[in-house]
Amino acid sequence: MNTDQKMRQSTSASAYGGRAGTDAGDGDPPVRAKRFWSARRVPAGIVALVVFAVSGLLLYDVAAVRSGRSAMRWREWLADQLAARPLDDPWIMSGAALLAALGVWMVALALTPGLRGLLPMRSPGAGAEKDVEDAESGVAVRAGIDRTSAGLVLRDRAMEVPGVRSARVDVGRRRIRARALAHFRDLDEVRADLDTVLHEGIHQLGLARRPALSVRVRRSAKSKG
Image 1: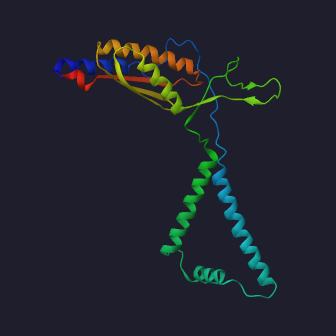
Image 2: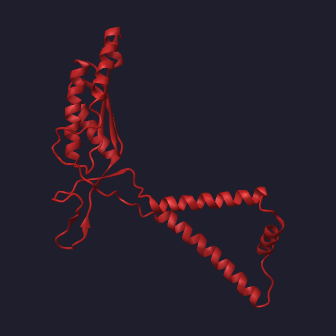
Image 3: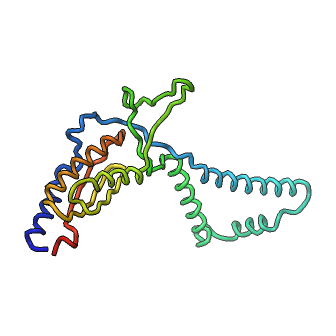
C-alpha cells in the first residue's frame, strides 16, 4: 500500500468522526424507554436455599440445646474461635471482607436491570413510554431485540454495498461500530454508501434509543498490492 492509499484511509475514517453520535435525518424524535429487568431467578434461588439451610440447621441446634442435649460440635468450635480470636485476626478480616463483597454484589444485582444484551424497541403507537396492550388480554407487551441478532442484520445489509469484501458490526447499547474491508471502488464512496445503508437499517430495527454509528473502511490485503 502506498502513501496515497494510507492518506485516503485516514481521511475516510476521520471524515466520519464528526458524524458519529448524531442522528440527523432520521426524522424520529428520541424515545425514552425503560430497559428490560432480569428476573435473576438463579441468584435469588441460591440465596434462598442457603438462608433456608443455615436457618434450619441453627433452629434445630437451638431446639436440641433447649431440650437438654449438647450443641453441635461445629457451633461450639465456631463460638470458641469467635471468642478467642481478636477482631484484627487475618481469618476474621478475610471472612468479613468476603461477606461484605457478597453483600455489595447482591445489592448491585437488586438495583441494576441486567439483560444488557437486549435492546428495547420503539412502541408502534403514540406516546413514548406507553406499552402496547393486547386487546383481548389487556397485558402490556414490550418488544426487544438481541444485540447479536441486530449486529447480524446490519452486517447482512453492509455486505450488500458494492465494493465491500467483508464486514463486521458490533452493536452496543449506545454505539454501533461497523468495520468493513473494501476490495474495489473508492473508500470514501464505500463509506458513504455504508453510512446510508446502516442508518436505514438502524431505523428499520425500530430501536427506542437510536445508538450512535461509527463506520470505518479500509482496503483489503489483496487489493493493497
